[in-house]
Image (cartoon, helix red, strand yellow):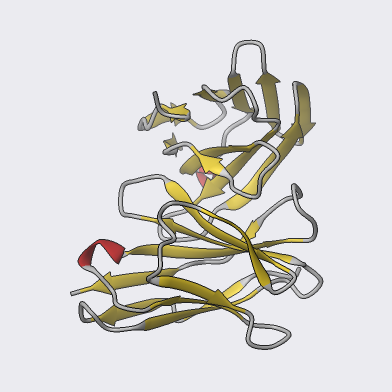
Length: 110
Length: 113
């Protein structure tokens, strides 16, 4: 079983829609959860960083972590064409290494 | 806003040749990392570096790889004898402290022929 699973998409939504992205994981030791955005041929850019379970909101973005279900989500409200990118979930235990999902490709159409 | 920079942006090399990928981490950061992303696959951890020594490494980081902080600003990844399967995007990252946010550079695209 892969440590971090993420549906690669592609996911296509109209501008203004609410987008829901998610990842599941198998390692119960993971405590730090992140969402990165990656544009084509660029480096990952951090969007959200969450420790343990709960919700975190930043502008149009909300991250949720449910450790009991080993499930994390990222919601994007009022999606814009500029949100079109690949979204990577990443997580770590008490180690240096980030464990990434494969990424979900999102296209927001005008 | 401070950012991680990497050079070169692209590198083409012949199989068996040595390559050195360079990174300038964010200036007040103490922890440095290399990751790679093979085309179409997930970003994979290679190595972390702190206080002038390797802190952690993955199975991918074998004897062909080495890292160095040759001066106060640069952080390098050396691949001694490149293989075709080393073709990937290599990302450098840095963080102020362990378990804090890792900030990624734009990457170096390495192509081994």
